[in-house]
Image 1 (spheres, rainbow, N blue to C red):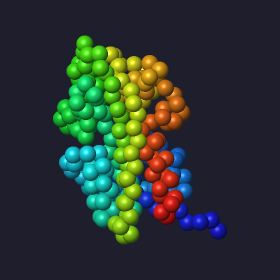
Image 2 (cartoon, rainbow, N blue to C red):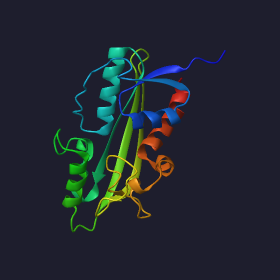
Image 3 (cartoon, one colour):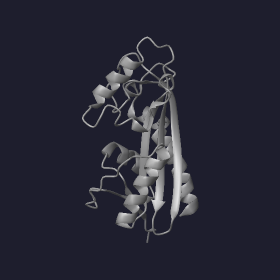
Image 4 (tube, helix red, strand yellow):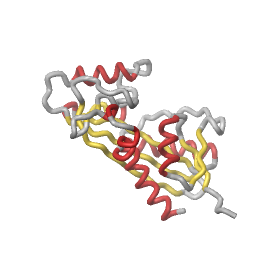
Length: 197
């Protein structure tokens, strides 16, 4: 008889995130918030990615009495002193589209030579019953492109340019998954989970 998989809830209903997590953390059984009929909205009011991901993981683990994995990620632009940072998803307000956000950042950097940017993902594992916490960070260095390019991607992929001149949206899924900040954070998390569980 095979070893029973550890059950973990993922604090997301994002299919893309879920697929990536399942590919890397193969030895676990995952549930989304939707699977468990959990409609909780967590107010992400932390000052860091770590604070936000821990808050989400803690609150959901407490409600569901299950280990939870939550993430927070964003774009930090050097020329804009780290903006939009932890407010990446919300810096233009709740009703703005991703296209609005991408256009806005290109506009803010118009004529600027320093276009360096850092994509940061922080993933936190929290188990209310055992009191276990693992926090893992992944980063990807790049630049904000002068115009949107590429069709394979979501979020800021079409304006996040790598050192080879391609945007993330110009990569294949396979290429992107090898270097993404989420992948790096997940690999670190996997290593620490294996030591703990």
